[in-house]
Image 1: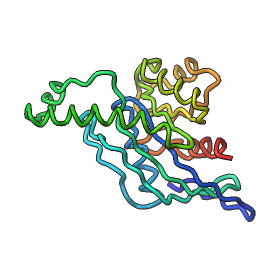
Image 2 (image 1 turned 45 degrees about the horizontal axis):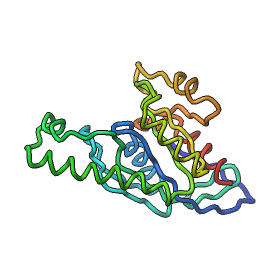
Image 3 (image 1 turned 90 degrees about the vertical axis):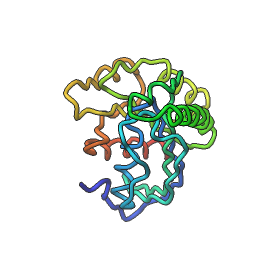
Image 4 (image 1 turned 60 degrees about the horizontal axis):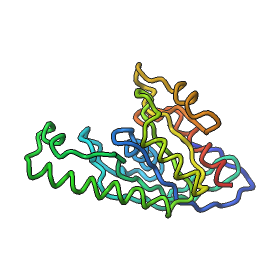
Amino acid sequence: MQLLQRLFHKSRKVNARIGVFGEVGAGKTTLVNFITRNYLGIDAGDVTGIPHETRKIKEIENIEIRVDGVELDISIVDTPGIATYIDYREFIKYGLSEDEAIKRAKEATQGVIDALREFENVDIAIIVVDSTKMPFSQINAMLIGNLEIRKIPFVIAANKIDKKEAKPEIIREIFTNKPVIPISALTGENVDKLLEEVAKRMR
C-alpha cells in the first residue's frame, strides 16, 4: 500500500509534533507502527496483547509525508495508554509473576502521568478510539476536553473497523462536530485519510 504519494510541483513544508493518545488497548502503537513501517521501514514499539505494553513515551522523528501540496516533516509520539485505575493483579492473568506485575503496574501508572503531560509538547493530536466499544468513556471525554481547552487541534481515529463488531458510526454520532475517521490500524485501511485530515489541521 502506498500512503499519500501525491506529489505537487508547488508545496510548502510544515514541521509538527503529533501526539497519539487513547485508552489502553485502543491501538495506538499499532497505528504508529503502521505509519513508521510504511515511511521508515521500522516498528516503533511492541504489540503483545498485554495491557500497558507501552509504558514510556516513544518519539519517532523525521517522517516525511507529502499531501495536498503540503510537505510534512513530522515527529510521531506514541504515548502510554491512559487508564483511571491500574491493578497489578490484572497482569498476573497474562502469566507475569507477582513481582513483575507490581513492577509493570508502577511503570504503567507513571506512563499515564507522562502521557497527560505530553499535551504540553504536541502541535496536534490523534485520539485513537476502539470502535468495538462504547466510546463515550471518562477517558475519551477527558482527552477531548483537555485538548479543546488548550486549543490543540485533534482528529479522532475510530479504530478496529476490521472487526465485525465495530460501529464507527456510533463514534461519529456521539462526537458530533468533531473530525472522526474510521480506520484499521492493523490493516492500514483509511490511514491515508486519517493523515490527510491531520494535514488539514496543520496548515
